[in-house]
Length: 406
Image 1 (cartoon, one colour):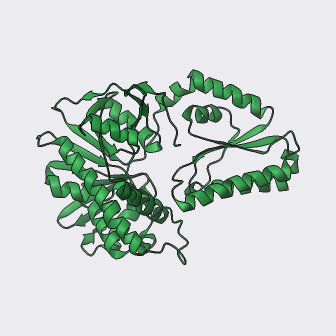
Image 2 (cartoon, helix red, strand yellow):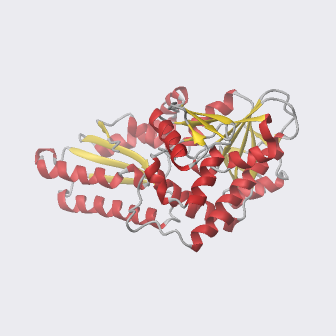
């Protein structure tokens, strides 16, 4: 769920002191905090949205972590410039924001990362028709994806300096697949590099869509790591198979979890990421959550509740769940007036045409179901748009059926 998980606070960052203990560096596209400039020129800080930030927040709270991320808004950029681009202590986490050129970031994020790589890894491309790899795609690759990954790696290298302490660097997800290569170029073997892929890694056949030069650079960069982490053993195995299939010098020697490549031995392992249970339970007791819960109880009434809460994303299969609900109402009319489907949706990546189209299809299907089955008092589908973690937690305390469809 891409929801905000804490209220805004006045920003009280301070310059980081020299680090004398083992250091963990997290690198991600979106950082753990975002910033808003107030009228008096000060900044408020808000914990960032996204499952990745939620999953890694506990690590940052328990260890000495430097978190490197892109400045996503003008206020983020202003905050970074105010601190001259140096790491700052924000609520116990050292944060360093790098500032990609806006045009480069657009190409990196809205052309290569999304939809190209995301759709490949979720196997969403209509391959007889799409994607079309043209000159614009290659420009987005070189001046967008490659450039921003290089800038991220350079920021990490500058942030850790020339110290001799052990350093573990954790590049996160598909936006930063080239960071290991640029890190290894700059830092050699003085660092341990362990990227983590939060989304599915498909088998070799899915990767044939990507041109050979892009694919080779991407895979060989990940093999500049010491270990590559995935959510499942299947993803790790698929990664090993993909490297073996497309890289001539990559060999597994019968292993499902190890690759030998250019005198390096790289592990591919599954490390499923959980939620911070204690934090979620605490949020469930917050007053804001209780207020949302009371509002939902009043709106649901005596109806049974089918709930889904998602970022608006084709891979979440939101549209198909609405179609399944329609089938339920058509085939089992005794449930009409007695069940409501509550869909909490967080719009995202609306700059990408495929996402805009998908959102329109979702809202159209929900409206058609209500038009076909509503009796004037009972509304079978209710959609709420916006990012509220408290509302999502409140709804999860009330559902009879939680819809999570592959």
